[in-house]
Length: 425
Ligand SMILES: C[S@@+](CC[C@H](N)C(=O)[O-])C[C@H]1O[C@@H](n2cnc3c(N)ncnc32)[C@H](O)[C@@H]1O
Ligand code: SF4
Image (cartoon, rainbow, N blue to C red; front, side):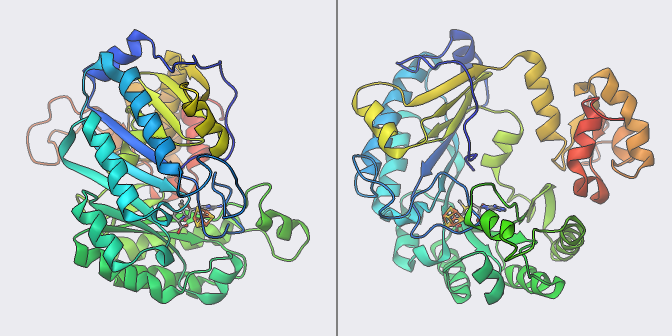
């Protein structure tokens, strides 16, 4: 997901060139992931601050669903030039997100995938996902995506309860979620559903109905996000005016615990604080972000990371397209992460994973915090014990001791991270 605001950073070179150290790291690493941002939605939901635009918000080249694919293809050509010294790393995952990618014709999405595959070989068993709004997919479009190489669709379901959907300004008919899931399954696509909890006015029973309905549709993967009232959105204005109440932490915790119980009873294991999957169906693309892998983010506002260099594109689709038309890189800024920054990021992201964070990756203050975190019930005591046997029964070779959050730790993950970084007592 693209963040709403871009960081400060150093100017990016006009031709997008990367340092040879970053390219060497990519060449030596485990392949490349591609994120493609599609910044269009039929209407803006009142809570969402993603970099996305409704019809009429934009004018000019690259600023419409008709001309946008051409701008993306120009960035693909730029990436080919920039990454050439790293050889041809294989594409392990592709994720088309938004916005609402399925507002583009399926042929455009398949054409974009083909443009990527023409430059970098798609790895055997690669995961290729598109996000979609339940109203924006037809059985024919889903079948065309599957034939064109997509393997997975992630649908924004959010809730099954009409008054909750109305507060979220969601325009989709809840019945369309079941139709879209059935059509995706018929097409042979894996399905992920996004849910949001903590919407003002949502009761615990409303939330239970949403989770139970999502489970009954039998997707391979479910994400559940706590509603965040983002500054500058219509929802933030409604909270300020007192028309709706802001989400409450205790309510969110109760809903998280309920979701975790229902999902795990139904065979979905948590593998990241907000993500559950049937075994083997974890989102490999998002795991690449969380594990500090290499990816190129195409499109306005998209972020990229290759070998410790991070950059981000201009946010406005018109300015983004104009840069590419002029033959330059659309990057707005970039930074080279120091070893200390990379270590802190690893703690921030990996501690949220079921797989956990190797204890060796912690600074000494973080290691000192471990007994207190166990005593407070925030991390699993077992993870800290050197196992004799690996989970598959083989004698333990070098599996390091790991920090793994408990359920309570997942609810208080930000505080745990501060203690692991040595920032809080
Ligand atoms: C790009 S959208 C998914 C696809 C499509 N645009 C849709 O909404 O149906 C990604 C997901 O981010 C989540 N999201 C967006 N804004 C959020 C917010 N303010 N708080 C919590 N979750 C949010 C929603 O669950 C949404 O499905
Ligand atoms: S459809 Fe998705 S991306 Fe578009 S405004 Fe709504 S939540 Fe945001």
